Length: 312
Picture: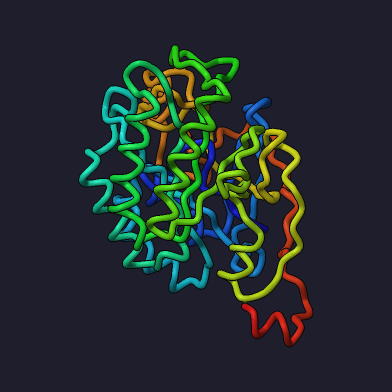
């Protein structure tokens, strides 16, 4: 089983102690987003969890928990979003300088091969034109290229409940930005990928990414795994199937473009329900929940060939 921690909320930034308590107790209760009183009981034992994929914009509060996670033998890697927008768009994040320092510190602790940089989403408007993005991407590549194994970017997509007012980028501008990003990334030896994009940017050496990537996971854990495409993601998402343990409307980073929150005030109210000792992220079970055991098994292949042993 691949554990996603989490697309729905920033657990490393906001709920790190809770997550470590869940590893210690060996299970977590995860709500069904469409039936909030129904929960899955997801086992977290090491023999079931093949790899953990952490998603964060501010992993600094989580760094102190990494030694115990390593000691417990859980393989993992990080997807860290580091954008240049500032508090006009990402209102509750530390400043850019501090986030760059955190990124480098995390890389020193876990190694560049377990750290993916996300420049995501690319928002194009009068405040953030294409030329501004090229300049900012150049700066961030210079700062981060030694600390990460790749960069993944995507353009802003409007969701049904989006309230940001940002507009989607036209394809001509996408190509102009991608061309500039590709030239910059090549100078710094930075592999560059897109996330969930329909547009073909292969002319610039840019491939479609799988953020939850079976190849990267196989390299990290040292053996091949059975990989099935996640049917619950967007059509152009290449991610393999995983189990996400987060809850929507619980992230307090305050990003204007966030698809997982229906407003920062709602997220703050719900975050106030959090107890790091609870088996669920928000609140405590009251006895009326419907709890079902989630099917779970290791995805590791039992037999490893000599070639695979040498490769991994």
